[in-house]
Length: 117
Length: 116
Image (tube, rainbow over all chains, first blue to last red; front, top):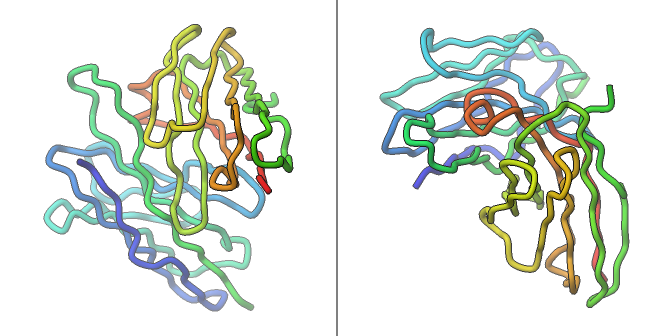
């Protein structure tokens, strides 16, 4: 069975500092990987995704994540955070739909990023 | 473009009462989902639907029922609310399951339910 582990429940950082939010997954087959962001009192929004190809994927607001198959990781990074990045971040995994089976996204428990001035 | 709309946004119930959460999407999506979000637990799938008139159980379906009578609406019902159902409920939709696994889920803003 698939699972997603987000190693840190809370990550406090100062503005303009770099940040890394860690995500590890377990799966016996190839996976698709996602990061979603949830701003306070809002629903989740897709931040970035890895489907295939380049293992480094980027979002429009400066976040990037690297798929590392050997370490089964998909860590999220940003070189310089802003106050507006304060949110909860969820890593998610799904299996490619080869056989038409009913599957869904499996979410990690989330990491709360708190950016302080 | 409203996207995914959930009603009500807040509700307080007493144990044993019943209620229905409504999810409406205006994107002509085939697939719809109900999740619950609890502190430290992430999102857990309750039920989902792959099309009008069809529903399926997710990870935590007990105590909930759903219906998808119209393509744009997905209802989540609690027949006899319990304190363990205190949570924030999120509805989501996507074009197709295949796309949902390789693409994007569109979420509503959530419904906060408290059961006393």
